[in-house]
Image (cartoon, rainbow, N blue to C red; front, side, top):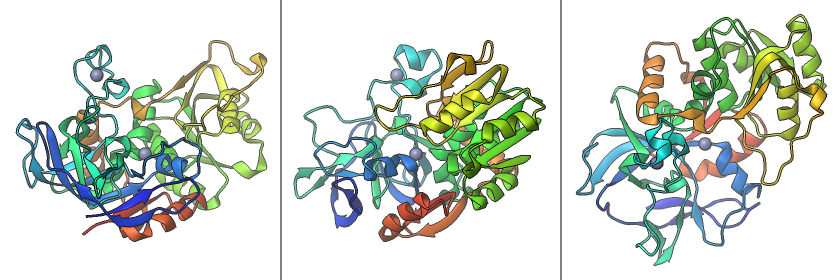
Length: 362
Ligand SMILES: [Zn+2]
Ligand SMILES: [Zn+2]
């Protein structure tokens, strides 16, 4: 099968022929139909996240159709439509059992050390990014990395819910503690930020202030539910947020890019007792500094990992919101391409031209 291979940072991915193993025990072989291009993949290409020496197949926001299942699989059968999620869980550790499977660290969904690799190229092991590797015609996944979805849902839109939408909507609905009537600021309006805005709208926020440096993204933010927009290039977002909220600041600020400067602004824009939720992932080793005096009384700063998801229930729930017209996903797919277009999709993402590009395999 064809896959996009990552070898070194700052180099384009190359489309090559690779081999995929058969499903064992609790594994599921999925024919990839749609694969979203997400910032976490870009982090490797930009060298912000260190990659090992082995070649790797990136991509983790994917949906497809089950082709074959291992003997131990009871969740799905061939022909079922599934979405992959990088919050693969074990189901039996303390974090899983206390309702936080998104924080499971058991690496349960990977094959053990010394096992035959799921992906190889002429016998050379390839790394399966996030135990998914969605930039390939097929994916070999543990059943705890997938959820079965309704066949009526278009798979390109479903794919987005596996990472970006799950992360953003979940940050608002699950992590933040946002209550109806509260005020919100969202820093960064890419796929994740737009999803935070939608989550805040669904939760009943009274005001949703969007901040981005691209006018086109602010336009999308408005369509997603933002009530006010701030041009991030002017560098006075905190002041503008205070003005818009009569000096109070916002009850909830979200940072959806992973830039230290924006994280600082998110914290500085809080109201007394407000909460900043950091959704973006800063580069390895990044320091976030702010003067203590910038912290409002009893404010909180927290991170959100993949929207605090319990994805087996959250992905179908968010797709039900989509079916009802409450979660808008159609406009979020700004561009569709083929596997060969993956490098162009990364360029468009960096240039701020798209909410999401989705690679289609049919
Ligand atoms: Zn992602
Ligand atoms: Zn676990």
